[in-house]
Length: 283
Image 1: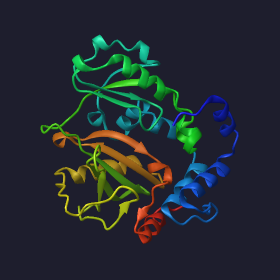
Image 2 (image 1 turned 135 degrees about the vertical axis):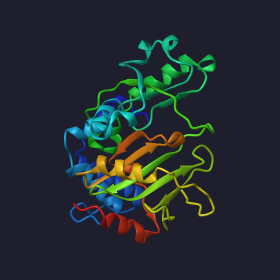
Image 3 (image 1 turned 90 degrees about the horizontal axis):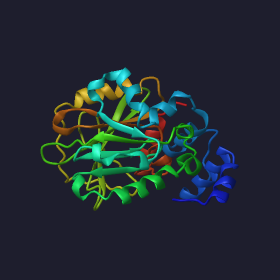
Image 4 (image 1 turned 135 degrees about the horizontal axis):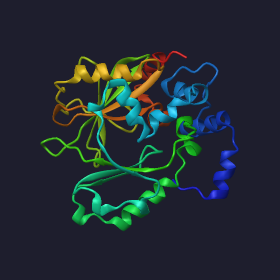
């Protein structure tokens, strides 16, 4: 969502707690209890305000996070970076390989995938990346870690498995322990997702607006246990952290670290699981 500058400056003046209470009420029809939060989504809003450490900005920066994660679990889990630039006009597309991925470093979107450089529209890519660089995720979500992330573009190696797919696995970690994970499917059609406990039994809940499908067969990764170990290493010392991995042909690659999934506006269903999952975050 693009906001014109005068309005953006006015929004910036609203204190974080007031802004989040208003935004939460708009989504849920009620004001969150930030003094004694109970649900998962309420506690995510609490964390936005009260859990702020300088290195969180490094952890969400798509460029700097690579060095951070490498120092924790090793460089073999990092997708190689091809280049980094301050503005898209500086990218020399002629020097990029035939397939690559472009990402802006400061937000949760801003991704362009090139599978064939001969058909890749560079002008549209530059326009898109400039639009993404103008976005300030902090202003609209008050996700504090993004506030001070330097805005850049990185190019990464394009990764896929032998079937041309790239599944990602999102591990929800509480106090350094994986409680469950999410596997998306049909990302660009009828988007759904299944949740699994660490033993790969299907969890009896889903995310609002992203239905699960018990008939959807998703094979258990053969290296699931290793992914869990790595996720727990990265989430150690955090009340809550989601750790994402790609796993093409059973080679684990770091995806991203997320403090606030869906910015805390997509509750788990049924409601009793929104409460139970919320109880796993110890404030």
